[in-house]
Image 1 (cartoon, rainbow, N blue to C red):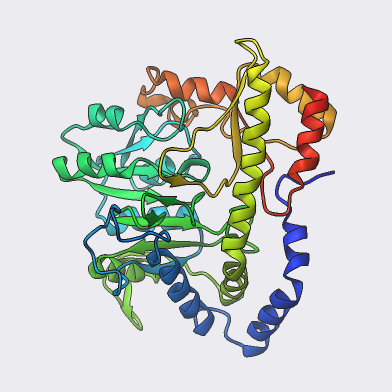
Image 2: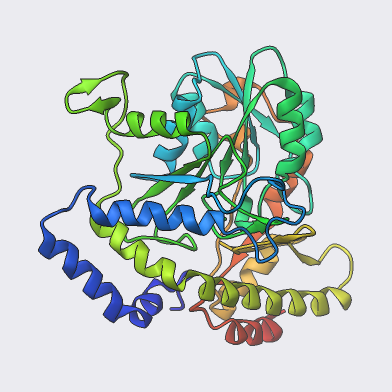
Length: 388
């Protein structure tokens, strides 16, 4: 059975490097923190600060001195922890409202609610599937404190527009780059667009470890210090706890694995993008000869954007029929996501979101196909040609 994400193939490709890194950690006796975690944080920050090959011309951060990296990385135990820590560091209080996209994984809204905040569900753009800035603007009220932009399926949310809105209303922005570490928008990389940005190292993510893991990114030294304090039991020194925090640490073994994978990351992203290009070409050909009501349309990637293609997601007019054909052909697939967040049982009592027609529509049409660097997309496309 073909896997949706071929982690076994990836491990075989890097086995010698991975085993050497794993052995070094196990032999060191340093399993929490230490040099591997410190080195990974520096390498993640360096990666983010490189920007795109043309960085510094007209980018979102144009005018800043790229000789001095400004984004710093702090690792933690998971992407969900990263969101919780970010909200705590930004001072979210019970009753505060945070605008989140209605069509995404539950974590952004869940973390807001966990801390006593109220998520406000914004509709999405029907083509990019990213949060809609105009809908965000319409949701801002006296209790609004911030916006969480999710880089859905691997491309960055429209942060230029979101930043303009946030600045006009005195709001902070969290960038949820859990699916998009390595993506580029304009001249800058994902994980550099928020007051705090976060990512996840869940195994199936484009840059994943062998368990849970996450990281936060910020250019504000005070926020960086606050993040480190919260992630370490609110501690600023041994047995000195300035605030109530969490125990959220990335272990050294996962850091060592991520350091190996990071060395190969850009090469993998190139393959993912080439795989996506092949899918794009196939579906363009397919749709050209298909009647309205039976089309299968890929997520639109915005201008001046590159995607990590955490998943290759299409909108199928008749998803049920499409999935039956995928099953018959033995092509793995996933539905991301089967319902908008406002319809989740835990959020229904908020009485929001029924007007979010694009999020509702996407939840009825979205299907994701395998796209990782160790997937034989040519083989899948040949099966698609025979099945559709």
